[in-house]
Image (cartoon, rainbow, N blue to C red; front, side):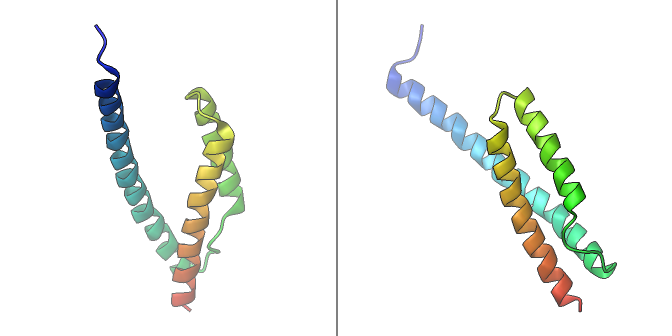
Length: 98
């Protein structure tokens, strides 16, 4: 027996809300680690950006997206958005260490 449409909508939205919360926590954890990478790069005079690593990660994420039946172009845009923010943080850390 299925739920009435409003109850089903409420249940689906609750699941979406939980996933959104998990994404926020995962992103926070990711950025904690990328800040550590940024500090290490700044202290070691490494460039803030690593184009080879970024290309590898984009290709990897596209493959994962395909396996998960998610649009790879969307996954790439999402990662590029995150990478732009990470690089900005790394550039700021590099500037602060000069």
